Length: 167
Image (cartoon, rainbow, N blue to C red):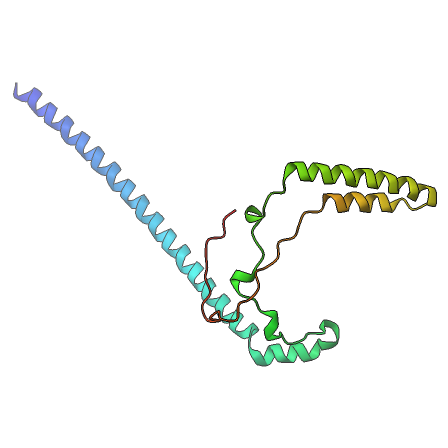
């Protein structure tokens, strides 16, 4: 009976040794992967630092001023006026915020525009101007353009309200 017990113990020891070896091997593989990823991260950080340094060189005011003087005739650059800047509230509406036109109005105006374009096409074809019919149809399909809100005088210029820009 001692011999069978010894054989069972030898089998259990062999199995635990095999399991231990596979766990150790997997841990070594994971460690190699961690080292590889750390090397990639270091390379990316070095690349970012290099690009930041390059950007600092490229955007130096003296260099930009020299380029502006050299290419002023071709580019015709002008300083930005303070009235050209707008607040976030003054930007046009998102597509999702544009009011939907009434379907019955749109059909009636499209029908009238189609009739008008057909009449103008007949007149235009008689006169030899085929592009007026296309222009009338394009005018009939035009959507209203959203306008920015007027700038209030009592508004604080330093505070800009922001919100999500989702469509």
